[in-house]
Length: 371
Image (cartoon, rainbow, N blue to C red; front, side):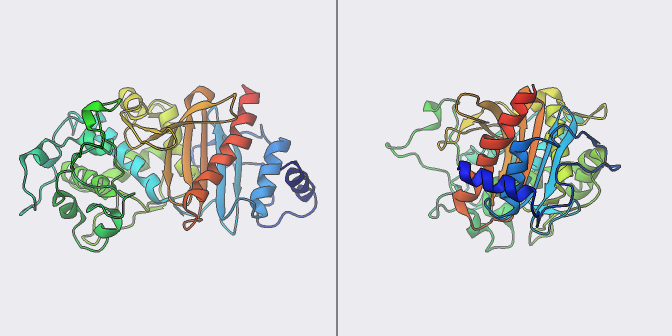
């Protein structure tokens, strides 16, 4: 690995294709961000930048870092630019959770313990069962409802690819049967947090239906309650077959705008002295509510919870993530937000591991040195 770093270092001073001309100088514009050249001469991040530019980290499209509220590193790769709207796939789910926080903040929703069926109604539901009426908004936020829905199991009736074959994705969710727990599977009451986690995109689509019902128009509400308050004006919602914004994935956002979503949580729900979501919702969103069951991850309100950094200097983090290894990661103890975007959509777990490696081997250790 040292030889690779040496080659990358040499490359930094020879020719620098695929990366922008000023790779260590964040762009100063009028988007609400202040900038700092704090990392301009950081050799380790120069090496990281060259490794990405020369394809050692596959199909990366951007790396943007904010420390103590200022953009300190910004670069774009493989023909992407600051104006590229990245399809960050399931990282969208966390933004959907943020919109629930907005409803709580403006009083349109009283509590996440409210029943989901109050706001998300369908007719002629299959497998009619009174237990469906007990599913709460919090159950959907924590991927732990009692319906049989697991995107990671090809045999699951609620597996996401099966949802995409039909028109009404909300109906698809409510038509699912109740999940069964045979003797060899851990029952919810026996888990650490009393919840059984199963990754379910359809449940987050239902959260979008709930937001739409309460607000009257999800797309307008997202713009008024969140995006416009953050100064985010250029974005793209993918739409479901029924015409609703797809809240389970695919929202296109610029890297610096994704950075704002992360900074909002670092700021305990504030942006420019505007309390967009409550401090309590930030705290609840980023504390564990369920165990994921792989890589020692835990799960909050559509936030993944883990640690990054060298083995002896791991730092707690909450992160948004999606296919391709896309990540928006917040480190409250370091006042650090990192955006990593990628189009390595067919990379499987390798795509997630390579962005984790960028955090573990380069970014987190170098920020730790600053504090």
